[in-house]
Image 1 (tube, rainbow, N blue to C red):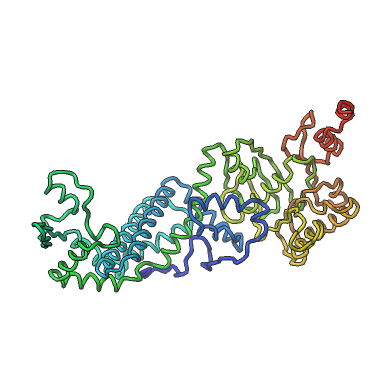
Image 2 (cartoon, rainbow, N blue to C red):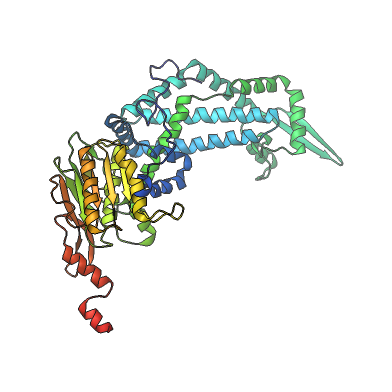
Length: 508
């Protein structure tokens, strides 16, 4: 069944503005570094692994991200969300029918399952069209899809297949036969249906009691028992013309279904999977905001937090601390320093997630946010020595850093976490400044988490951030703009390892 006479292109996508399907072979490092893979895994446990591929690439332009964001705004509307969720559940039943049909070996029974599948398919899409038509859709994507759906279900091809399938299904429902057991003989006799209706209902009326174990043989297990096979053989003789028509109709409609509608059914799960996750998290008190995508280079967010950490906190009970941030147009990079376990890496991840979810066209884990579109995200997180290669930690870091700097991806968002920790401080300072200057020269923006005090010196577009301590030098996990409190950080480490004068005196 085709798309009818609509003007919409056959490569229409509710996800990709230009219709090109993408399924990247390799996974960018930032999915692991920013713990985005953990978030996607959570959604896949409910929606299946197929939805994962839609999260593995960023849109190619700000226009495409805006297209998605508008669709997601429609999906978030309660009535639309309920309609689409009911649609996906109904399509699962259609898939179940298809799966059962593939198990069937008897050609007559396979034809019945095929007709049932078509009827369920038509009913599901017609219900979706009816419900979406009653809703106020504002996005280009959803309105285009609705027009395609209307064209499809009004097309001559669709109406012909649906009409024929429903007529055949109506006759199938009316098929009746009587089984008579007399001593050592069993007779199967076709009988005329009295008024049609459900087979099970007729059994209850005839017997005067509830019967649960007898079912229509065409609707039971795909594997027929000998009695069912015998019943079909008799019916084939008595109603040869009908079953010939049934098998012919099933064969001619084997490839039923629009490619555009099938693609929609798969791609809409991208939006529904994230909306289902965000609804669940909102019930737990976590905020999500529709980001304002600006042409300005300024990045600003209120109440930004690490979504992966928030998900794990539901079972661990750990408190999730949010932070506010801004990076002005004339500022390129944050350099974040502070005490160990002070929330530096978590803050860097939350910032990377903010950019990722905004660029991919979804809501962001924050109270509010505005930022430009980024088509590339690059990350480099601290690595351990490689047993396989025998390389030390520094060489492993440089091996991964080299292609990042050689690719020269202009305008990307960069997250660097604890580089050169095994190098001498003097060498680490020199290398760290060269890395920063390289990405700044490419108009990149981002954050550099480091233990090196003063890395931001002599670079006007670099902003110092620090992880805060309270009056007792205990981590607050709050991040503020300003110079590193080196003494406080050192005191925190000394206390952690019980090396203060009082602690040493007590121990000695």
